[in-house]
Image (cartoon, rainbow, N blue to C red; front, side, top):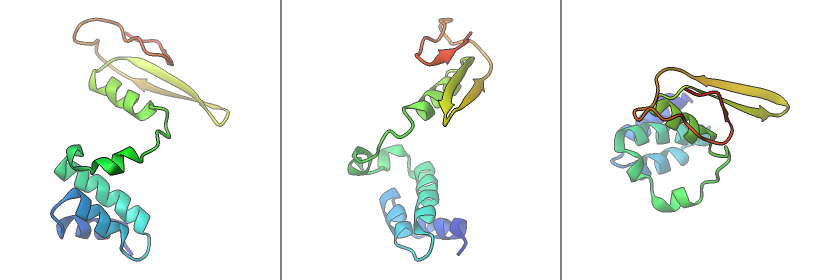
Length: 115
């Protein structure tokens, strides 16, 4: 079963974020992948505000906020390097470019470097 085509079908044939994800989660085959892709597509179409609040309350912060921090840094165009040990390997992600709008350096735990 083609996961992307099934996810597209679930989004196309429903009218809300919730109904698209529920439909995708109940298909035969690789339902978890189809639901994940459908959720991403439906989220882009309907917006994050349409994700049911009870679903958000059951999410676990499995990444210690790293993804949110990376998105924030990219959004604010800060230059920083985020280093973190992952299973004994150091991972470094560089965020290029311009200073913040107010000219202040970014002060966040776990960051090295900066502008």
